Structures are given as structure tokens and as C-alpha cells.
Length: 321
Image 1 (cartoon, rainbow, N blue to C red):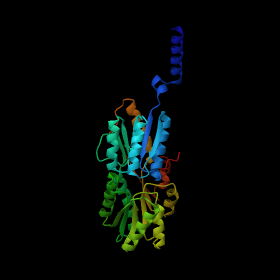
Image 2 (cartoon, one colour):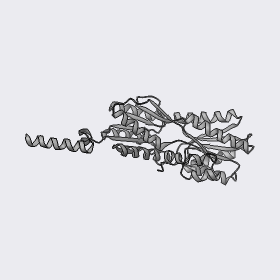
Image 3 (cartoon, rainbow, N blue to C red):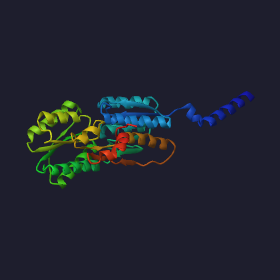
Image 4 (cartoon, one colour):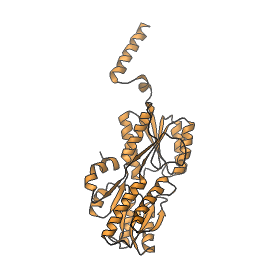
């Protein structure tokens, strides 16, 4: 018995010296990040923020990419739960599919943080979102201001939208339209993205230009396929005549916006959102009460303010540390 007591005393001293307790030695908590499609840079950056903060706090993270497939998203959810995870962070394909994820997580007694997109119903710890309505309204005002400077007030604005089944998609559209209508600028066609490809964006832009001679601007409710829109505008010989604004950002925007190739972008902060998702789970594990809804601001960036906002854009928006 004396030997075991001595061993226990030595182990206790080691735990105290390293700042660890017995639970942390025996089990490192695991988090699953269920994400819609990491081919879209926005989600890759959010995943980067999650992994960064998880590493800082000593958690393991497994990223499950659904590649925009509802069937794969469901398989990923089941696989994550079977792997004995302690918590889930989810960025679902849409608000409807999130309902099923929440139902399965509840059955397995696994806490869930939703990071963007949202859910139609279900139980979760916290929902981290961006103020999509305000962000869209603000970038709409940036566009309106430039259209007036160019005397484009009689022109129309087309929208290439993310699926309007998503709660964030609906908020973006309504906020942006408010900015147009307050300034008596008419909207043109609205086309919803399906496969989020370059070709789809190119074709939608081309169709809008061909079908509406009054078209003076296009708002792309995403960022990664911006080149499809720019190429279609150039091929139609409408460069300078049809403006382009986006939602979210790519690293190249730090060059395109100052040059005026891209008028502006409403930039969410995915790296920061990912960090906050892990922080909320960590606080929950520690028994703290966390907020049900966490809403982050969106940056309306144009040539006028990009230099001033550059440090925030690099870290929180693009994940460049």
C-alpha cells in the first residue's frame, strides 16, 4: 500500500505542476464541425477559426465536409455522433437540414452551436450569425451612392442570390432591396444559385445583361465565383457600365476594390465566428450560461474605407494572422 500511496502522491504532484487535472489527462474533449462545403472559401476560413481556437483551448476537432450534399451531410452527422464527440458546431446546407442534425444530436445528448445559416426549429445551445439584413442594407447603400455619382439612377440591379430557403438568404435580399427602394432604384431579375459554380454565375450574369438593357449593377450574394460575373460583364463589353458588388470576400478583393474593378463587398467575419463558436462550447463545458443568439456585424467595404479596415479584414474576415 505504501508504494501505491507514494505513486499517487507523485502523480498528484505532476498534475499540479503541469496544471492538468485527472479528467483532462484521461480524456481530451472532441468537437465535430459539420460544414456544408469547404470548396467555398468562406467555410474554409470559418473552419480555420474553429481549429485555431480549439488548439488554443486544448480540444480535438474533426471537420466533416458535406460537399453541398444533403445525403452526405446526414452521413457525416451520424459518423460524428458515433465517434463519441463532446460537442458539435454546425454550418448546415440550409435551415431545413439543420432540423434533422439537431434532432440526432439531441437524441445523443450532444450540445450544438450553430455557426451561420440557422435552423427552422430544434434545440441548440447558441446560434452565431451575422446581421445579414443590416449588412446587405449597408452594401446596398454603397451601391446606390455610386450609381448616383455615375448618373445610373434610372438603371436596374440584378441579384444572384444564395438559396432563399435559407434564413440568411431571405435577410440579405430584403435588406438590400430596402436600400434600393429607399432611393427609387428598381431591382431586375433574381436568380438563385444551385451548384455555386463559376459557369452558373457566368450564365446568370450573361442572361441578366441580355434580358435587361437597363441593367447597371449586379449584386452577387457570395464571393468566391466573382470572376464568373466579371468575365460575363467583360464579354458583354459592359465593363464600367455594369457594376458588381458581393457578399463576403476573397483575398484578391484587397486589390480589386482599390482598383475599382469590384465596387465593394459586405464582409462577414467567418474566422471570428469560428473562434466564438469554440469559445461558447468551452464556456458551456465549464458550466457557464451562454447567450442564445450571438450576432456579429458585417463590414460594408468600398474603396473609401478599405485601408482603415484592413487589419480587421485580414484577421477576422480572411483568417490572415
